[in-house]
Length: 478
Image (cartoon, rainbow, N blue to C red):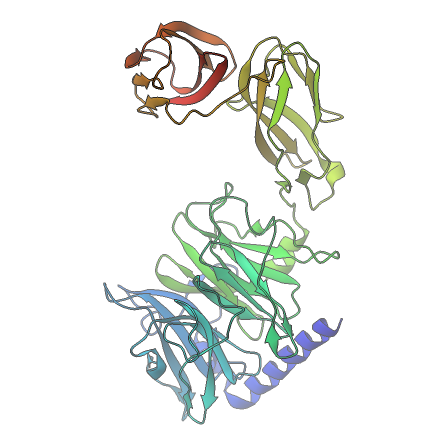
């Protein structure tokens, strides 16, 4: 509640400051505000052809604007530019003096307007390659960047600082994760990498987090299966248990097949600015409230661990209730299972969709990849894939032998097999398809070349009996 009150107070303060300091028709360079359809921000002044403007931030009083040039000219260091409303007009955008001689980027105004946060090289009290830093307002100018210290910095690179109402900081790490450091007693506590569903879903999530002052919602960029191409912009909401919902894609009015980045909210809360295909855009923030009440996609919270079974013995595995999460309520989910390629399960293995249980008695050694799917009432699905290894009762199972060479892999047909030294030959080899069906049996010697040309493209498993050991290797035929 204190955070919400703080956020409201800050917004009210910003609104009062804006109304007193700058004429309404001069806000945002006097542009006509956008609606739900994004518009390029200040074309010809801020957004220029031939350069990449990636982030823009506004002071709470509306009189200062800082923005980030990521790539211009080529090659060149990224840097920060600024413009100010002085003597009843906006100044021509220019490079901020502290950006000269160092790389700087992704500026973010603190809530009182006296600090500008960013990342910078060669900051005062420099710690890492690119430090999260701040510049302090000094009269009509700004200080050289000062490192925020360790934490939040580390030897790795960190990007895109966002300061929330209690002065805690969210940021992106060079590992492609969204992190948070709590601010307590004038110091930052250790960095916390946020869990699923904000991280660890989809490809690397570089983050670019914007978090509201009261930490009620978060805007990030990510590449996910339901996206439109490269990085898209998403929004997540804080749940009552203080975890976050599965982020929702902002849709194809905002996101494109190209790269979207840095969805930041203006101090008055009315607009989101963001980078798209090397230009800055802005759009109404009406989506913040409207998307909160649309369907959430289910997701995998805790991936299923790989399983083992024994030939001739009954196998049973129940997928834990915690595996899948639907922020609309887990009671909305129904379940199904197939092999990795969508084919039915092998004849010996059954799946109970009510108890979410696999069961059956295998008769042969094999490795299969199982796909379990959770579907919500809107028909949206989440899936997880895990490996089931069936081995003999004496414990013989998959073994990785560093001396066994099978190459090239992937292959377009011809594959070479070099056996370990001192291995009695010939060796029995069996080729299986992804359904676990035997495709071919053969005997091989060191240096044997197998010709898979003519077989259907896809994933195969080759099993070799090396003395008392069984070695299984995956082969990709393209």
